[in-house]
Length: 161
Image (tube, rainbow, N blue to C red; front, side, top):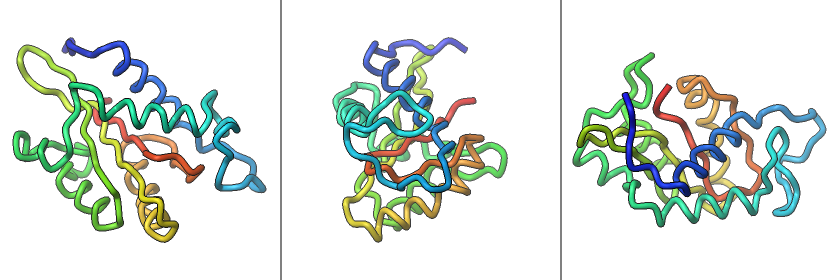
């Protein structure tokens, strides 16, 4: 299936998100937060660069707030492995304190294809911890490395294999 209408900035965001998704390799004594100019372990990106990509996502034409996406696509799956839905995952993230959940999508033959679910993180430390507590399950379902909190604005989960 060929997905059309991805802008260069969308492709850049997806590539950068994919790099960030695999950043679980860190030394046991490393700090869980990185300075905005420090590279995130396992990536070639700083927190500031990741945050810039988070901000850019909201300017892309091919994104939708999860609740709006689900009005158009209520049966969207987060994981075919256990049949978990985007609706259930988005609700868990909102219940944990997510400030926003966004679906990035491409288009193929007139259909919208979900590519990435991005959760925008709250600034409150306790709420952030609740969202990061969901990481083991969500990352396992998407076959991604578990993500850590480095002070970034958002986390992304691939929706396409």
